[in-house]
Length: 248
Image 1 (cartoon, rainbow, N blue to C red):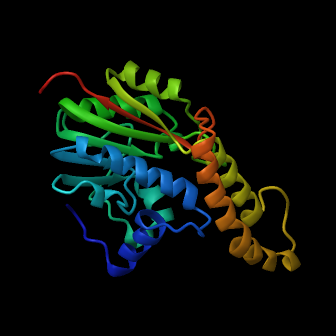
Image 2 (image 1 turned 135 degrees about the vertical axis):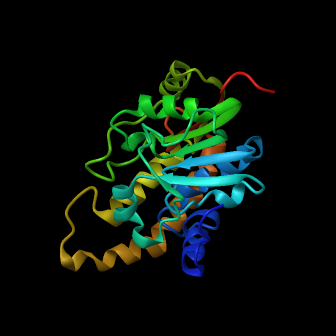
């Protein structure tokens, strides 16, 4: 299982992933990610590799697996510093493991940061045993982030093509949050982080006003409207589950 999170990091994971609250500015993206990964987690068994693991926020959803996290040192140092929970370091497009090492694989919001995402998926195929499964999630509607390492966004068809070209059989493709969640999350980011305009010093206190008043309203309204008006072509992310043929 690798390093155990400190109480501080465990609290951070609960706050920003497993128990994210409707009044938080990252609620919509994290709510849908957590919910959808949890729904398919029971399909993943045995030895699991989480590429781009960071703080391993999803590890608790996979009880009973041998969970190994891999990250790329420069990215991990920048985002997590000494708190990273990676068990191994390596390049996502040249994994440092023998072929057919793992039964399961995760790649959650990693693809967009890779100059060669095709190589990453091919490597995941290589290190999986026959019959093994991969869970792949990539953003669709999301601002540029992690510059200069942000290269691409994926449609459902793009994910399917990427996986099938690597040899996988795609079993599931799912929108993570519909049009209203995507629109609501973008409005929140624009209001709180100045994506629409530069924010002068005197305007900064308004950020707290937006956060206390509008953010909870937008989050709740987005979930309700997604239920009523189901539009999946404009989603925050898309998630795919695919299988390497062979095995049981």
